[in-house]
Length: 40
Image 1 (tube, rainbow, N blue to C red):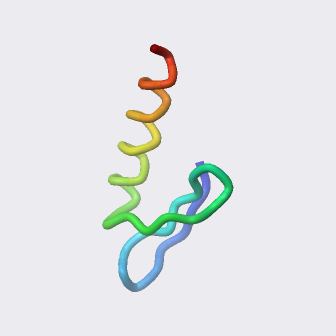
Image 2 (image 1 turned 90 degrees about the horizontal axis):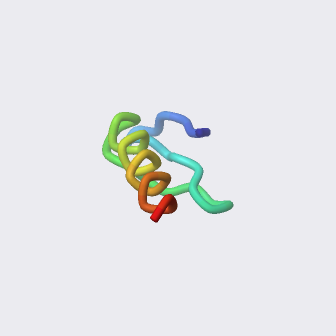
């Protein structure tokens, strides 16, 4: 996981590009759900 804080939230690295999330926690949850979905 890779990212950084910005004035509008948290820029998280996903699939080769940065996406804006409301918070780092939202980014971590998104990554977690994605990795769980990839298992199926």
